[in-house]
Length: 149
Image (cartoon, rainbow, N blue to C red):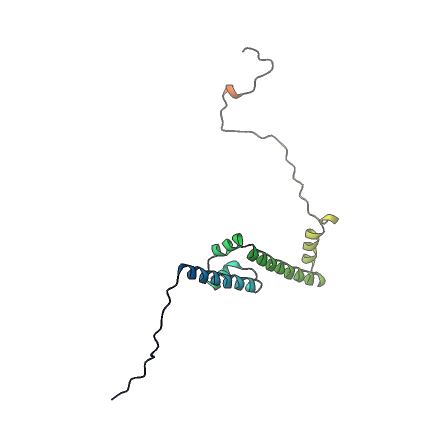
């Protein structure tokens, strides 16, 4: 005869979640995901689609949070500034290595007040005509010498 394993004598009681509990749970989940986005922003070089896909949310959710949550938006903006700082440091590394393209780029973007700009001089001459339209005499300008009316 085989013995049965003793069953757990405790009965599990399942608490029915209220609407309030569900909302609180979703808010907690949202806060966790927002924190994860902020933490991974630099690692993913600001690639919104990649972060959203990895966290299981759609991009529209991310952009909704950016529009509605000023604290979240500020944190993301700070992370974006970090990416710009990183790119600038790489640019200066190239300038230090005497990279001509990096030097020219820097001067064109940051040295405008010293004359490092490109100008395109565009000249237009000639007449402009309209074709394909018929104008009624009613709308045509009258000659000064025409006093027949």
